[in-house]
Amino acid sequence: MTASKILLLIIDGVGDRPCECLGGKTPLEAAKIPNLDELAATGICGIMDPVAPGIRAGSDTSHLSILGYPPQQYYTGRGPLEAAGCGIKMEPGMVGFRANYATLDDAGNVIDRRAGRIADTTEISAAVRDGVDLSKYGVTIEFEPGTGHRAALALRGKGLSADVSSNDPKTTGIPPKTIHPEGADTDSARFTAEVCNEFCRQAENILKNHPVNLARKAAGENPANTVLIRGSGVMGAYEPFEERHGLSGSVIAAAALIAGIGSSVGLKRVPVDPDTPLNDQVDLVLDEFKTQDFVLFNIKNADEYGHDGKAAEKKDFLEKLDKELRPFMEMPSLMIAVCGDHSTPCSIKEHSADPVPLIIRGDGTRVDRVTAYDEISCAAGALCRISGGDLMPILLDLIDKTHKYGA
Ligand SMILES: O=C(O)[C@H](O)COP(=O)(O)O
Ligand SMILES: [Mg+2]
Image (cartoon, rainbow, N blue to C red; front, top):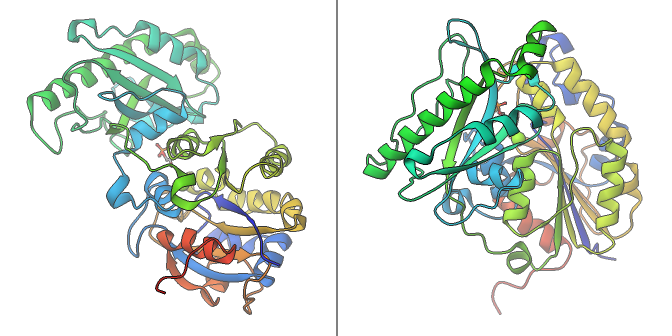
């Protein structure tokens, strides 16, 4: 029998490097993950460079690559994808940005790029959206909260350009940067940079004494008193997933960026948020398979623990996730691919180019000798080392959806 449906389970940031606090093991190596190990033992394993060897992929470029849209050809910036994921309709001419709520100290230095991983920014996002006035530039904004400290900004108006830099210093202890033209020093880039700087200035004023932030300070939490924006871009043009691969599909992802990528390539978006229990998310995936051929299921938490340098928590989360995977393993006709979109080693708190471990398991796949799901075990698997762009063709072949090359 051949499987007819594909589950692409992306454990965001799953790959890691040896962690001191785990006795030199990676979180995956240290974790007790019997279900993932069983998938490895009954499937074919390998390692994958999400984009290419040595490339530190972002979640945006890696997901595009894995879904079969080479980022070198399709990527127009993170902003429009994040905006789409936050529910903003990116029309032609609009420029989108990923935004972070962050914390400034009294001297104006960024002390926390994630404002204490603030959980709910609905109220302060409404205050920014309603309070910022860019009418003197003929520009209006859309500004929507994402999950946690994340939000998205989109500018609408004449003469805007995506050729602008970011104010995110990407580190702490220094002030936000001034946004300037980047890529092309045109009138529209200069104009857009000025608009962006004004947006950030006004947003900061609105946030400074906002009751939500006063309450956070009183509770000893980092206030969300500034907005950092990055990833400027206009929405790209994506051939619909179903036309490209011949599969109907859905995306289930609590991270707005991933939901935005999925919906931008034409996958049906099933809303979930970080508080949706994992077993409910699994049920939603199973429901989708009643009508869809393909589900992209992204689980974000491991990546956040990587960014925060919390190796023990990353390991614990992997164990928690593992417990929920049984229903997929028992579903007939399902081709399961498990991988990460990139590695987020706890030791560097950032993405690295280390390849991610990959399992493909379903009826008819070859079975290699790997019996554990981790970075090193999978490297000995029969899939060897592939690129993200190879994954969809391999999966389509395994469910008999490819055509012979040649006569
Ligand atoms: O979690 C995310 O959205 C990104 O992968 C990391 O972004 P941050 O460093 O701005 O939190
Ligand atoms: Mg990621």
